[in-house]
Image 1: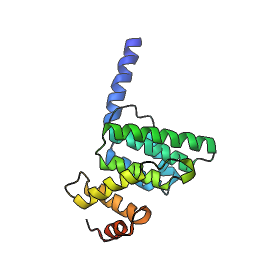
Image 2: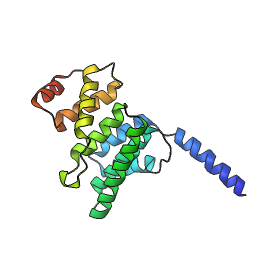
Image 3: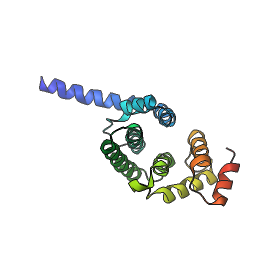
Length: 172
């Protein structure tokens, strides 16, 4: 009987991982910035991910960051921010050139209040993203992620005037 449950757990985890749809996660992450319901759905889909794929770990980090955003308890908010930071670090370590991972970490860090002290990668990620946008379509950005990054940076970029002008004028 134990062998059956072990096999079933392995089988389920392998096929559950294959069911993860990155474009669907991307859409949920984007919509969750304005919807607690979408944030909960994102967490439901990826919050228990235990694999090693950098992009999926980044979405897990994003789900924890959104839990912090919508949470009511300050201690739980801080705990979720720390988990997000941990998972983003792991995601970047696994796939350091992935611009989508870097964008998600940037989007979370740039919107995290300064007093929490979780903004250490903002400049590094911003520079990678701007460079990726300059080199698009030969940068590793897909059209979808480049468009999302550009639109986000138009609104939230901690950029110089020259960088802001570049982002505002960028056509993809």
